[in-house]
Figure 1 (tube, rainbow, N blue to C red):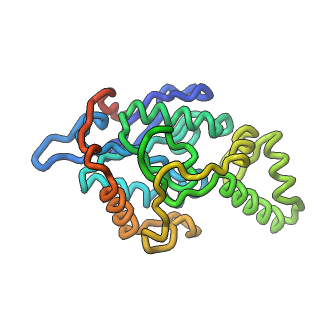
Figure 2 (figure 1 turned 90 degrees about the horizontal axis):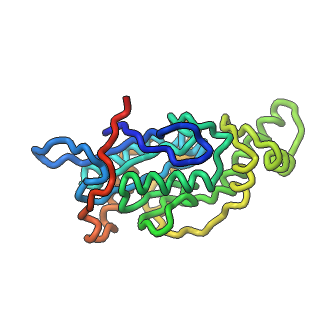
Figure 3 (figure 1 turned 135 degrees about the vertical axis):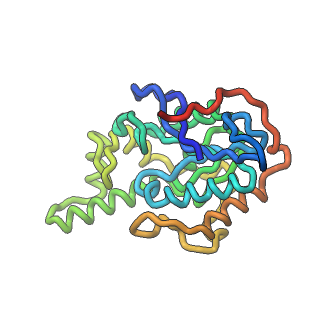
Length: 253
């Protein structure tokens, strides 16, 4: 496991770099690699679930990456600007800026494939092969966040509806589940219901309920192993070689 950085490319952030977590397989008896981009096997860009689901699925995501490394597949999990350890303000981010950042991360890490998790399916770089795991429309996730906010407000004796909350958010932004979302993000989330563009790995294929359904963050080693195996079994043989075009991993200080 390597904690590394990549150049921040989003125009709405003043941060010079973003954090990423990488797993690079080490050959038996060999030295630890210093370059994710030069790994001779597949190099998987992992896009995390969004907002509250990112927290619930973080341990599962990292466990899957560990399983992938054990079978020879390198993977890297970048922080989206405004999320995780990012110094960029979340309220200035939106779907378009995240897509630009993801494209920059894919280029920097010389990714050969992408794995999106839940609503991050909408961020997959065009032309990069890979998989959508249990894709979920951003508009559906926004509705869930609005509904949860509205129910909490009612319990506190406040009136209002999800529709009125959405209208306010599209004008001034909203704080939903602890995430400060700007008006542009709210507007784009509401409009985003794209169909899957990559092969879909359904939750049914993992033979267990989705961990995002739990109230607290959780993990399931069997599900992580199953997801890694499904990815490995569907990789084309042509994905096993690499051309080094990017800089070595820059270790976080």
